[in-house]
Image (cartoon, rainbow over all chains, first blue to last red; front, side, top):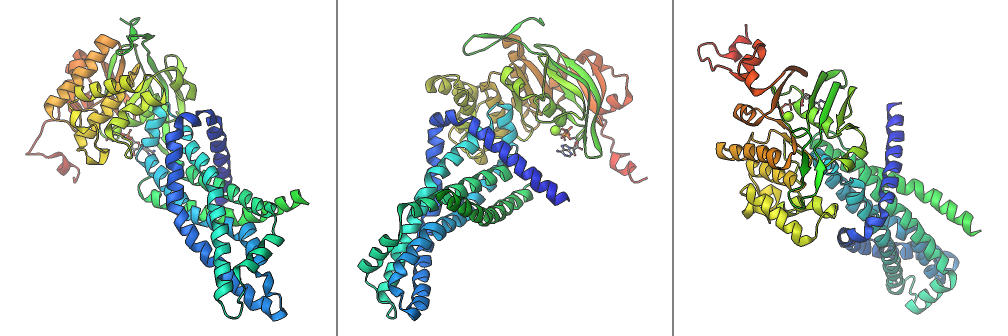
Amino acid sequence: MNQLTAILEGIGSTVQLLFRAAFYTPTLWRQRARFIEQCYLIGYTTLPIVAILSFFIGSVLALQAGYSMSNFGAKQFIGSLVGLSMARELGPVMAAILLAGRVGSAIAAELASMKVYQEIDALETMNIPPARMLVLPRLAAVLVMMPVLAIIADLVGWFGGALISKYTQSIAIEPEAYFSVLRRFMEFKDVLNGLIKAEVFGFVIVLVSCNIGLNTRGGPREIGAAVTKAVVTSLILILVLDYFVTKALMHLQS
Amino acid sequence: MTCHPTRNPFTHSETAAVGVAVEGLSKSFGHFEVLKNVTFSVKPGEIFVLMGPSGSGKSVLLKHIVGLERPTAGRVTVDGRDAAAESTREQVRMALVFQSGALFNSLSVYDNLALYPREHRIANEAAIREKVMRALQILSLEGTANKAPSELSGGMKKRVAIARGLVMEPQLMLYDEPTSELDPVMSATIAEIIATLKEEYHVTSIVVSHDRELALGIADRVGILMGGELVSLGTPAELRTPRDPRVAEFLNPKIDLKHPRFKKLET
Ligand SMILES: Nc1ncnc2c1ncn2[C@@H]1O[C@H](COP(=O)(O)OP(=O)(O)OP(=O)(O)O)[C@@H](O)[C@H]1O
Ligand SMILES: [Mg+2]
């Protein structure tokens, strides 16, 4: 019962924070320095690891597909399988999971420590809303950076798949053949689909992490608790939202 | 003197001095009652000093005045407006010097001071620079402008927090133990600053302090809070001859080596 009210309270305060931040959207231009700093932080912390992970995910996909598809002589379609899985599902989800681990945790830690050490109180007495100064630039930055992360994940994943397909003896498909199948069976809307998902995940992760950080109460120990809570909540939300967003997008496109 | 306006020291624009009224304020955290039916008022342009033992609820009281806490019962108004309402902060310029300083740790000292005028677009960068450097100079902090708060000593942090309040040019300034970590000369400087803000700019000040000299030297009135109750309220002159024995003991504790206080606890 207590947990249920805590969850409902969390949802309520998150939605409230969203509206507060949205209200200050017109101030974004004069906060452009903060916005650029946040874009840089998201890119700098998340891009390299997204690239590395997607490379291996693409490779494994090709390997597994080669193993199962060559049994019924369909291994020339590996390109389309890797292409679609990365673009529609794994690219956005991997990028989101890494964003939760690197950016969500950092946001929760920073805002929680500002709260615990009364910096947030100081901002409020100075009539500088935290939603404007701390939340809005981060939300705007993630909206800009998330598609970039997802596209990089897709491209590197495809490339990893192509490399493995060429150099694994049991598959041995040339990159030209791999990419021509990939192009034939994929449409732009598949990539777009993935980008929309990435956008939703990224936005929710940053919003939830900000809210958890700003609602921290107590001493330094709660900072660690806030970080854990932000990451765990983000991961759960990614997987739950994944289902619903996928379903909604399919419904829209049919 | 109550009708003097607050003059803005930099733009010389004038805004009315503000008063504060605390009416029957009670505050509980869970079952723990921190403030019990506290009533007093601070007139526009007055220096009100609040004293009291550690843990008596002074910081909690200040937080109610700036609207960071909401009363369990009773009401706090600033310039006639409900202190708990968000709009009050937009109408009345208030600065609170936190007991811990509450500096922004990710910003340099300079940026800590410049944040308020920048965010509220009060002046251009050159004018802000002038203001900030002047505030730092007043508090002998010129050398620290580019330092991070983590590189400062406790007393320096306190002074930066005061300087940050000064740059805001508030109508109402609240200080939570501004002199507790400072040497005697610096403490005197702070007392002079508070008195000057009153004399020249008619800023209303509420000062929480354990510093008797400061209280008796610059206060218009002194309130004493004990266990969440306001047990005494009067001018510094009245305070020199307190009637309440608890207040007398609090203001003039004798160091008694023959019968130490902590030993009385054991019997
Ligand atoms: N957020 C809070 N939750 C629960 N209890 C609190 C909270 N804030 C303060 N208290 C309690 O309220 C009481 C008064 O605290 P306050 O900080 O106002 O004391 P103070 O008079 O400022 O003391 P000091 O002179 O040591 O600063 C203390 O017993 C404290 O434990
Ligand atoms: Mg205190």
